[in-house]
Amino acid sequence: MRQNFILLLFLGFVGVLYSQRNQEISEEEYAKLVYNLCVERPKKQSEIDEIMYPYQSDLPRMDILLQEASKKNYEPGLIYARTAIGLQFKNLGLNQMAETYFMGAMKAFDSVSDPLTWNRIKLHCSQINSRLSSSVRQEVFSELTTVFDRKKEEEKYLWAEATLAEGYSLLELNRSAEALLKLKAIQREIENLDQFKEKMDLLELRIYAKQKRYQDASYKAYDMLRFEQLSLKSRLEVYGILIDIEKYQGTVDLTESYTAKYDSLQVVLADSSMGVLGETVQDYSYTMMKLQVDDLQAKRNRTLVIGGILIMGLLAMVLLNIYRQYLSNNEKRVLSLEQSMLRSQMNPHFIFNSLNSIKQFIIVNEKEKAVRYLNKFAKLMRKILDGSSRRETSLAEELETIDLYLKIENMRFSNDIDVNIQVDPNLNTELIKVPSLLMQPFLENAIWHGLSDKDGEKKIWIHVEKESDVRMRISITDNGIGRERAEQKKVKRTHKRNSVGLTNTRERLHHFARNYEKDFELEFIDLKTESGESSGTEVVLRIPLA
Image (cartoon, rainbow, N blue to C red; front, side):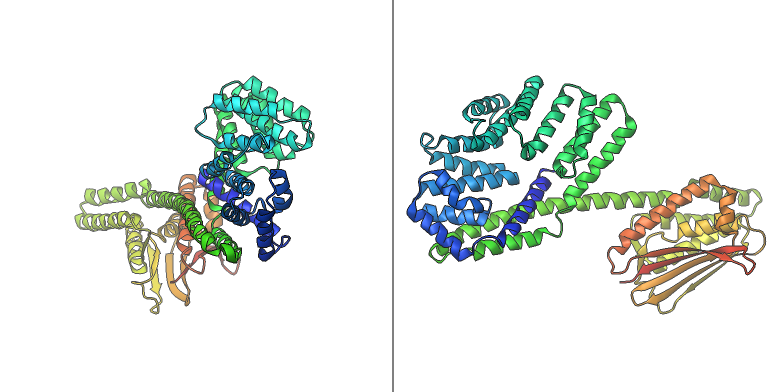
């Protein structure tokens, strides 16, 4: 989850970089700007900020300032660049890297000459320093709230940020009442709170949850979820708190609903960056390379190579974790479908009826029929178990399995069903792959919903043909009573089981077709006589070919 969050922030940062690109000066002009800055050597951070403010969120350009200032021993420029880069890494969630830059800036800093900048860096550094305990962090933030003057325009937002950070620290120390007072203080002192709204709302929600004010917490959570600009990470945390609340209150339906939304958001966070990341890395590297300046080229090239390797390594790790999570979720889903498919094929009613038929043959002393039936039944069970361990099988094996299944079912119908299987000779059934145990649910429907209640002649036609170079057509037709009359029979238990079987078959076909250019198609056709009466059902299945 943390890596996904970092990744989304990184993409948001690159979006900002894109939006600024066309509005800024060229690379050559920027190189001259940095060079002149290091020559003129202004001492105050505020003076540097007047020149470099438009570029402080641009990592490649801040890196150029860092290298040039280092080359010319210009410490105020080094401090400005390290602080800006550290702030960007902090926003990306790369706290260790951010802390390295912040600490580098503070070591070279004269806190007496520019206390405002010193305290601003101290605030950022304290927010990400995981080695500080909650009590120490709270003391630091409390001290900073007294340093920043909330009446001054340039300091009031720093005061608000320090106060908000202290509120979070107080909550970690189980001092929720004091945390709430800090929150109210910000609301009283600052008019425009847009930049703090999300953090303040989250703090208020956590306070209510901590104080077990569940009704207030629920109202606050619903209010936050209505805010369209709420980040995915915060939305996920809101649902997490709602889950805890509903679990405590024993509301099972709401707990399950919020859990489902929580899980779906996790998937969104994992999948949303796929496909864009490669272009992001390429563009970032391109921007870094294009901004090279001749007099910095040798030294900065080494920095770019090392930085590029680190960034690529980090992104590769993030991508690998996302991809593994994706594969794991997909594998679990496919495994679930395979298990459902096996349960569908191993229908207890089918097994019971088959064994009962064998028993009847033995009772009436028809041992040869009993042995033939038993052999066919055992062979079918082996095929079903073997097919359940494979996601794909050859068309030839699939046809052999359904032929065996139909023979067993037909023996129970005293061989009253006329089965006709036709296969296009242009199809190489040994090479063509289909999902294992694909046709059985449709044949079971045909027999038990279409033909079992029909009087007179009973037929099933199976046609397998090559429709085009990229698709095969399978049709299963019966002359049964049709779907409308079958529905009227209200055979609820069998119908429900077959509905589940057909749903699982659709999903397995969907996963199978993802490896091909063409998708699968499944169509049910109600056959009618000239007088409009039902004369059976045709199932048409179109499957992609390699």
